[in-house]
Length: 103
Image (cartoon, rainbow, N blue to C red):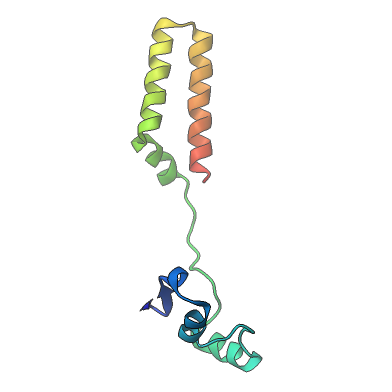
């Protein structure tokens, strides 16, 4: 049973009793007094707010091999196919990029 910064690691392979013991809890949960004490000690269960920027996510798409293959397909279809077909493939690349960065 490993603990890091109060978090239990490998909890999925522990029995429920072991998890309760390591969390100092039981199957009924925490009492109101214990919950208030932990709230004062540890604070609210919130993550640090960070300013969200989509630019690094979009730039990371260029490292994806699938994205590179799609760009190559657009280039080849622009050379061998009609402009309409190349344009459609370019739109699909854009859709892939936006959908993948939204994850």
